[in-house]
Image 1 (cartoon, rainbow, N blue to C red):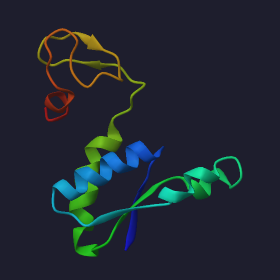
Image 2 (cartoon, one colour; image 1 turned 30 degrees about the vertical axis):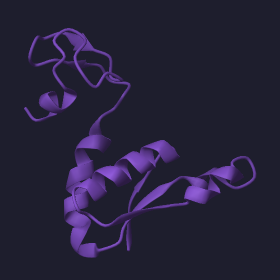
Image 3 (cartoon, helix red, strand yellow; image 1 turned 180 degrees about the vertical axis):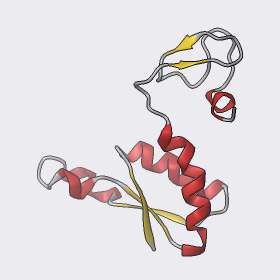
Length: 106
């Protein structure tokens, strides 16, 4: 097993774990049960982590999550379809409904 990603919260960890599993990659979320220790345990020890079980899946998992981890929700992005500026937290263009995935693939 090898650690792939440290998530900000359990929701993010579960989302990424689901994405990996939907692509047939073997992963596990660790530190899931430590969330109850917030305030009692060192915070760097309780962040949810995503681990890849099979090292043969490492490259595929890293590539798959690469697009997700490059998105900075604080940065605005410009829609290549209609040229409107969108807040970084938007996943689709507010004007034409083009997906941010469409933007990243260009």
